[in-house]
Length: 396
Image (cartoon, rainbow, N blue to C red; front, side):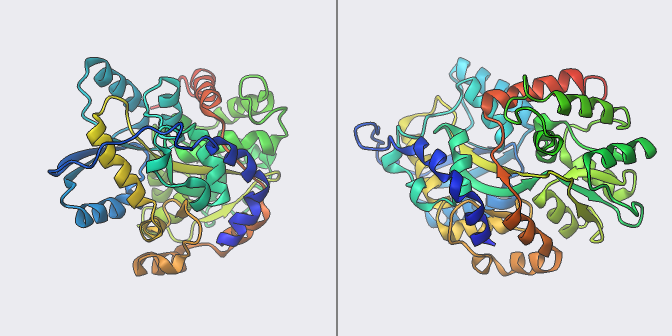
């Protein structure tokens, strides 16, 4: 599986590598020593990443009680976080140390200048990402613009997931999906892209499927995509503000088909939200749009706390901790670091993926073109256009 990922991304690795050339001592700021007494760390997860990484953070707590006495884990909706952070920073009362985020809040934070620049500023104290990351992860890391570290990665989507007992002939083209939705109104669903990985993957993947002018420019290059999404929306009852709601309705039988991605396909079947029998298909012209989660540090913390957070990043990027991210398939595959096979993962993860993983994913990952998502500015623009023209009256 890992060799397939490597083959798929090797040609694009050079572009990502360029983002980390300036990592010499001339550019690096010095960090103070770790504190002499342990501190409490407040971590906020806006991506569901704790499903993959909480074990690694807890292992840090066990390994270094002299540095950190407690980690408070909380979760929040991605769209709410940037405003909350900005308000705390402006008031000089920041109470968030670490943010685990997907591309949505990462992009918003970059746009609003909320994150600490980790590379090249603290490059000497942080992992040498060029040396340890998978080529696919290096490409994704470039999207962070030095303001986060990729802690987990997924092959992504867009995958179309369906109930085979209710959908006898699954669509294989975009046209067939539209025709199916028209013939079966309110039976297809996806969540608001601004806070849903599968929703985001769906709209970013359509330009490749539809042959749009420029898949990386949602403002000027997505004419076919926006027209398609508007027409498809006529047969979508509403857009939930989170992926979990789509999976719940699919599992309960309210919906027969939904936009998904590798991890969101595997994990809900493992935990029983979605029946094990759920099947997948892809549409003609499909390209994977890779997904990832990042560790970001908000601006406004003391240098001493920053030293602790850099130490935590170094720890969770170790191979042994990265193996935990296989979890129960939530971010399939999971590790962003190379040379971390499934055999290194906890036995529970190995057993779950053996039973619920899909052999066809290995073939898809090996043979399907893979693309990076939109950059921060373009992603924010895509979310705005979708909210205004597609989801305006149907998001709840």
